[in-house]
Amino acid sequence: AQSVTQLDSQVPVFEEAPVELRCNYSSSVSVYLFWYVQYPNQGLQLLLKYLSGSTLVKGINGFEAEFNKSQTSFHLRKPSVHISDTAEYFCAVSERSGGSYIPTFGRGTSLIVHP
Amino acid sequence: GAGVSQSPSNKVTEKGKDVELRCDPISGHTALYWYRQRLGQGLEFLIYFQGNSAPDKSGLPSDRFSAERTGESVSTLTIQRTQQEDSAVYLCASSLELQGYNEQFFGPGTRLTVL
Image 1: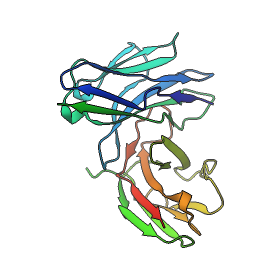
Image 2 (image 1 turned 90 degrees about the vertical axis):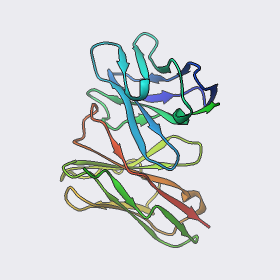
Image 3 (image 1 turned 30 degrees about the horizontal axis):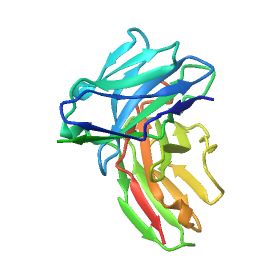
């Protein structure tokens, strides 16, 4: 079975500063990786996903993430955040084959952008 | 097109009562998932439906929880004899099919409060 660890429950940052939200996973098979964002009182929506190919994945709203197989990580980054990026961010992993296709989600990281 | 919708958006009930939560997935999506999100926690998988296959109920926390889906459309999640620990946001998601690489589309959730 796979698992996901988001080490930071909250990340406060000032507007226009860079940010990195950390995600580590464990799985016995190859995986697909996702980042979802949840704005207040809304459902989750996909930011980006890694399926195969280039390990640097670009998503919506200027976010990107890098898949590091050796470190089993998929950290999310943005070079300059806006107030509107304040939200809950969830990392998720699902298995390619021989395992569960149901994504496993991390506990979430609350990004708080201060003016 | 229309996204995933859920009703009601909020539900307050008394301990011991039954509640029914509804989810309308995106048309054409064969896979449908229910998750529970407790305050400050990640998404807890409850159950999924894939086409006409038997649902995977492995995540249901007790026999008070049940769910049904009519074909590839509406799903209802029923909680009988509600307990205070059932208080949470219940999220529904759908995807084109049950494959690990597919993006999930989430509804806004139903916030359940058990008094």
